[in-house]
Every structure is written in structure tokens, then in C-alpha cells.
Length: 255
Image (cartoon, rainbow, N blue to C red; front, side, top):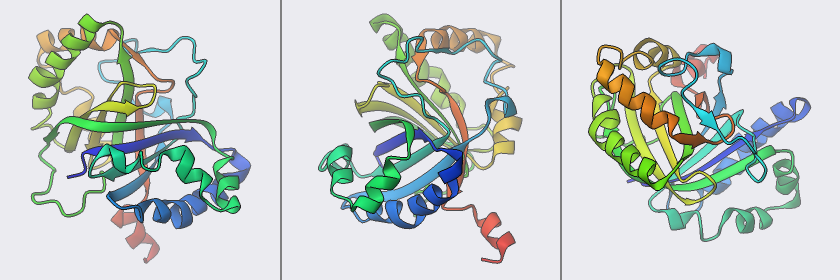
């Protein structure tokens, strides 16, 4: 099972974006995938914030007000899954990157506001679109990824109850949902993350955003829990996968 994730959020300068992305997909990701225990890699581009409606409307999420020490990049999200978190700690990111050729390190230095987490899966649910069995573990074409800390120990316990009793179980029947994973950190600023996978951006818009509305008591609980979290800059991100490319895009190109 892919119980561990290495997640990197970053931005790229526009003038180097095409070259950087080509290098990531053709050079960097294959090198990471060669590491023992790494099971999959996926690369996502975040959607502009104006292109989607946050769950329950705006105003529920608070972000770290003083971002000093917490890099703010979030336009691209690079993810790798592994059997367990020490796959990404031996060697760690700094040591692994230092071992790469200078040409690769030069490309890495173009990243802006890079932020990383190594996380382990606390719990997961499979939605109606999950495949059983699923030999292809690469995450879905569309994701939502929130990374955050609780405001207090009491809030953290309430959040754990909310995820166990409501948020995760309630998503098992929502159309368009593939999987949802609650993650906790081994390394990185954010202690918690929630990683949603959808069949498409449209499915996320059509079914996920408003699925709580028929249950006002749960909407109130969700609002209370979410307001007691402090998110990383830019979180939560809604993003679409740019590598591996979705099959329909490859087919349209004649690939």
C-alpha cells in the first residue's frame, strides 16, 4: 500500500516554466521513481482560486498570517507515494537533491517558494469511483489538497472526531469521489493534510462542493472545525493532473 507521501508545493518563473516542466516529467520524476519503495509519482497544476467555489462558501479557512519560515509557493504540486515514510527520509530531500548532477540542481533552483512535507496516511475511504482492485495507484485527474495545523490541542481532538465520524464516512457515496485520505506529518510545517481525489474538475464542482447542504447540523460542525485550523499559504488547493497526462488528453493528441 502507498501509505506514505512526499508532497512539494512550489511556483515557477513564467519564462522558464515550459523547460522546467519538461525536465520534471522526463528527468526528475523518473529518477525519484527509481528509488526503492517509491510506487508512483504525479504532478498537478493548481487551478486559479477564482475558478472554483470553496466548500461551504468563502470565509471558513484561515491562513498563517505571518508566513515567515513557511514558503508560499503553491501553483504546482509534486507528489510521490511510497510504502512507508522512511523511503523519503533515507536519503532526505536535501541529500537526494545534492547528489544530482549540476544540470538537475540548476533546474531545482528555479523553484520559487518551495515547501515540502513527508506525510503518512492516518485513514482513507474509497468513493464510488474507486477501482477494486486498483493496480494503478496514481492519484486521480483532479485533487483537492488542504495542509494545515490545528489552533489548539482541544481543536485537534475535535478535528480527529470530525474526520472519523463525519467527513470521511460521508464521502463514500458522493459521485465523482475516488479516494479521500487524511494525512499526518512526519516532516514539514503542516501537521495535517486532507487529500481528495476526483474523476474530474467538473465532478468536484458538481457534487463535492454542496454535498453537506441537506444536513445543516453537519454543515455547522464542519464550519466550526474548519475555522479552528490554520492553513498553509494557498491551501486548500484544487488542482488538475499534468503528469501522467489523463488518457483522454493523450488520445486527443493521437498518443
